[in-house]
Length: 355
Ligand code: PLP
Ligand code: COI
Image 1 (cartoon, rainbow, N blue to C red):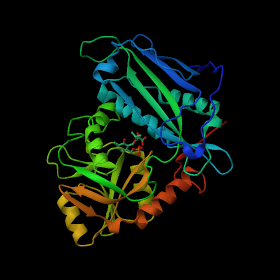
Image 2: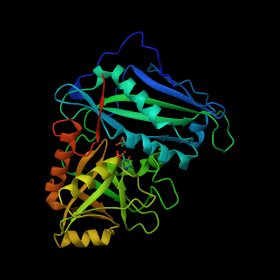
Image 3: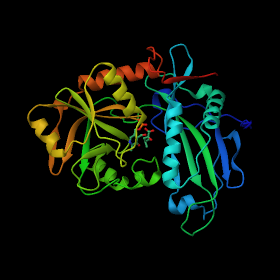
Image 4: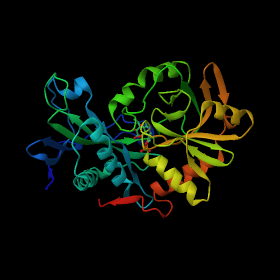
């Protein structure tokens, strides 16, 4: 299918690369494509970035039928542009979509559209340290109907945002609030899908945590509220007795591409790794006995984010002396060296954009 291109009449000024923050600036163009039951996905096109014309009755606004993803393009030392595991991110849209009764997308077409969009926007890929071009594909239900059912029509769009680090504290160990009051996901729910409802469910706890001086929320399982599952925008990893442990993908946790990359890297170094549930009691006991060596989160936006404090019930639990641990540091450097093209990529994760 041919992807048509309409260029913007005027281009925006570029922001200062040292002041990007996360997700605040958007490039000049976007990718759009529509779905109709008679035509399937059709009319792929690159157009000027602009507001969507939305009927107030559009179903996504009422019932939240939507899936999205998030990945990044990086500038290498030679000035080239490369994507980190784009096929896995696009494939995840197709794992999220069925849970929301959204039709599957053509993965090859989406990758081609993405690469063409990034080639057009190549000057927006920043080169300052720790910056990248964040890619946000989004699929929304576009029928105008107040009846509760799956939409028949959809819009898929991709927008691009030059970003700096997600957390202002950077690589400093974060303070995290373990939510015992609210639940993000539960067996049979939406937790494994990247869909706005999961984030909506997390906002109140996130605000409570921020007001109390914590940067994020660690969610426990929705049934027993004993087992850590993931953090608001990242998967969680523990290093205990020399083993890297992360909760299993049992349906309520997002299958993070960074999580998978962390496991591949750590296993390639011969480090024992396990995907298993760890209860809060087991964690606290290991911490008291000095066996809980590190806690860190991992995700596209968060990269590798060390955790120095866990607030659980009324206690602030200091983990690993509140310092960045050696496993988190080694993973951070290994992962970002591959992403930014400073190291060879033995896993075939990076994909060039011909710009
Ligand atoms: N868990 C949640 C809830 C997320 O929002 C993210 C971010 O995308 C992740 C985990 C990490 O996933 P990934 O590494 O694919 O970005
Ligand atoms: C990501 O890491 O891509 C995320 O989606 C996290 C957050 C910005 C929602």
